[in-house]
Image 1: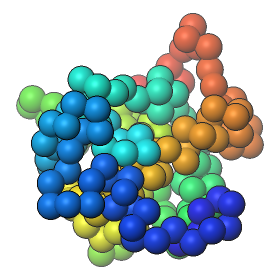
Image 2: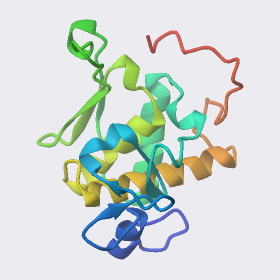
Image 3: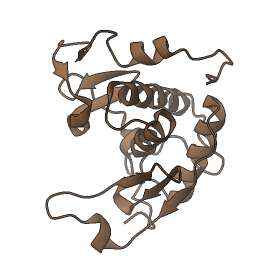
Image 4: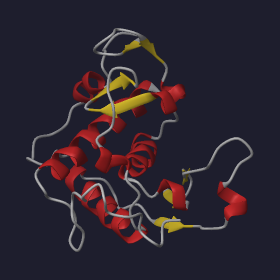
Amino acid sequence: MDEPDGRKQSSATVRAAAGSTGPVLECPQCRGVLDPRDHGNLVFDGRVWCDRCHAYDRELIRPREFQEIKSWSGLICIAFGFFPVPLEFADDPAVFRLPSSVLMAETDHEHRSICFYPPGCRLATLCHELAHIHTGHGHTRVWAGMFAVLVAWVKSRLDTGQGVAGYQARQPISAGVPARVY
C-alpha cells in the first residue's frame, strides 16, 4: 500500500506500529501487555497504547456528519491504495442500542462494506472498521497495527488542517454535535 508520500508501506512498518514485533503487544510507555480484543481500553495512534498512558485527540472521537465520514473514507482509501469501501448509515435505535452498550459500526467482510450507526460517526471508528476491511482480520495484532497507522495518518492531516472538502478539520470545543448524528 502507498503511504501519502508515495513510499511503500511494508508489513514491518505495520508490525512496528503495533508497538512490538514479538509475540506480545505492549504499551510503549508502561510496557503493560495489551490484548487487541480489548480494544475499548486501548488507544491506536501510531502505535497501540493502553488508555492510561495515551488518549485520542479530541477530533478523532468527535461526532461528525455521515457525509464527512464518507469523504474521509475516500481520502484514506486513496492515500493508502485501498479499494473504495461502500459505507451505509442505519439510524434505527433498536439496532444500535444494546442492553449494556451501544453499537458504533459493523463491517461486512463478505461485501467489504461498513454500516455506521449514529454513535459511531467518528474518525476513530472509521479507522477501526477500515483496518478490519483492509487486513481481513478481526481484533488481532495485524488489525491493531493497521488501525494505529490509519489513525496516525488521519491525525497528521487534522494537525495540519488538511481535512476533507466542505468540512473544517478542527472544530472549536464549543461546536455542537451535528444534528444528523444523534
